[in-house]
Length: 126
Image 1 (cartoon, rainbow, N blue to C red):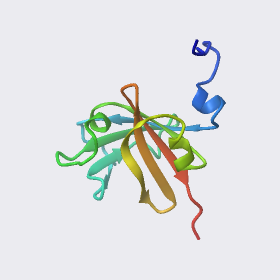
Image 2 (cartoon, one colour):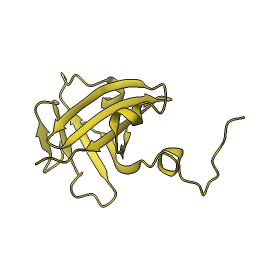
Image 3 (cartoon, one colour):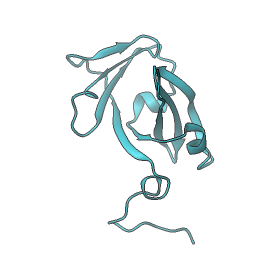
Image 4 (cartoon, one colour):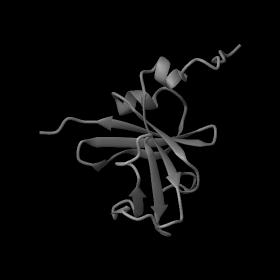
């Protein structure tokens, strides 16, 4: 029988694997004042730097190449120590192969039971 966590217990990714919550990404079609455009990813982002809860809003260009699940559903993001090791935790459907969207950051995204999950590894740079 599979273990089911109790209401008071943290998710396995946090409790056993050591992952840390980073943000909740929410797709939107609304233009939000102060949003930042990421031309290499073809979407706008806002709220990340100012949200005390880690909420990020994302508005995608019509030709954004990301998977539809990322563009249409919220995703959870976690910090991990090692991207490749984290991806070995399950037989995940990879949505975004490990990549570096900005200096010192490596990310990957996968699908777990219909939900998009992002993992981030922060790499020290000189």
